[in-house]
Image (cartoon, rainbow, N blue to C red; front, side, top):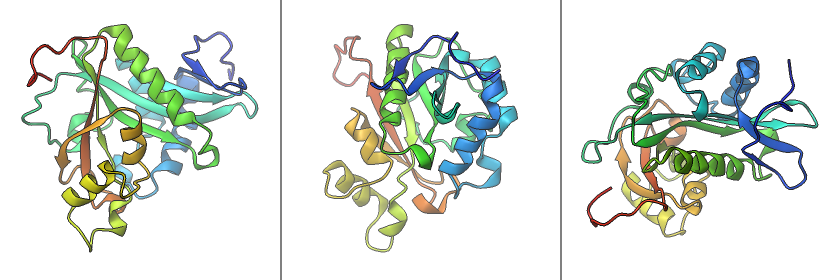
Length: 230
């Protein structure tokens, strides 16, 4: 079954070619293809496979999105999320620990925050606004569930080119000032995310020297009466 017509669309491109829907078990191979094309530097142990994507649908189906290409009838992009409670004083956790070794066993049904475990646009589909569609769907989910916001460990994939010239803190600061462009972090900052902190040994990826950047997007529909409250 390769038909999304019966699925609820969460977003779509203006020309109607691309539509965001909740991922389906029959998409598992296509989701895996996107994952491997997007993250060629990840270790084999950290990559998600078909069995992972099918398991995610058993854990938290509402948090799994796919961008479907109606012309080529294939998955063009995807994202994976779970719900968690966040201790912002102790946010620095390895990626695999945070996502239960890609099983999403760490999902908390009553968690106050949506955690972005994964997002990727197949290289063949980049610069067509698909990540914008996915981030929009995720933020709509936050609003719909009444969550406090969306958090993630961003991969600063451009840092490897600057590691000899500056520490990660300076790199992230300069990306935040728009002095440097990062292929991942810059995109997320443009979508309203803010840097909370840096995570050493977040994952095994040479492109970002194993660093992650903990980012946060707050639900604008909730009040924040206390300045220090997150």
